Length: 290
Image (cartoon, rainbow, N blue to C red; front, side, top):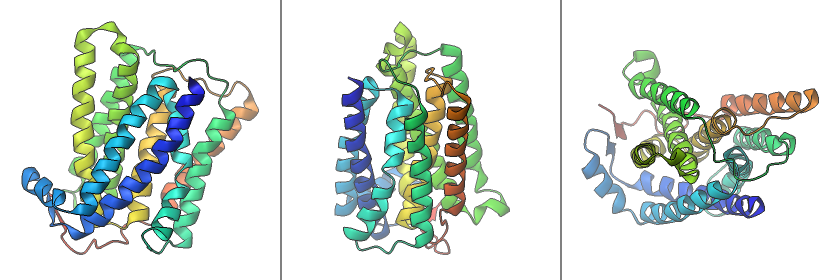
């Protein structure tokens, strides 16, 4: 069953990248998104055929992602998704004809290599690793909520307002991670508690919806590669960490393996620093943030 989950994760990686590129094309042609007028903004995005197509592909990817998480450990699934980041640049260049800078290629390769390296250093998995400690889940998700709240308020500061596109892309990645961790908890039955299951369902829907909306805002502000790449990097790295801290996915059992995993995370950090951000139309007020 783990092997089937891995195969589904590969499909998710391809579908997610395609959906994001379609939505980016649609966002660039849609009316400006306003976080204070969500219904009007959603109607504007829905009128874009590109964005509607991206939504449809994203929905298929989301359902496939749930299936993958129910069959394989979350850290393994997200590492495979991260390893497919290079396909983002290939699709962007070959299908949509968008230019891809060398720095972007390098950032995607480093990030994908770093997270995929975790697959090679993780020990053999037995089962889906859906069990979790409730205090660990609450602490991890609570910490992400606080971090996401800080980023949501960051645009109000003069220093960070110029980096609004980066903040929104990072925030979207964290929201996707919040929903992903909650979905993984649900695959284990939410610990058998009806109240906990209801809370995880609510968290999944709330964070998933906010993530889609925030992602659309970020896509209007930035270019495809840096925005989609940063969102994926944050979402995948955070969920891999959640797999270890919440669901008990094991780390490498040897010092050499741990050193390789530390190298993998260093590559992820280097990828985030190299990913060009703000190359999109930051000077245009495409997104009206209250």
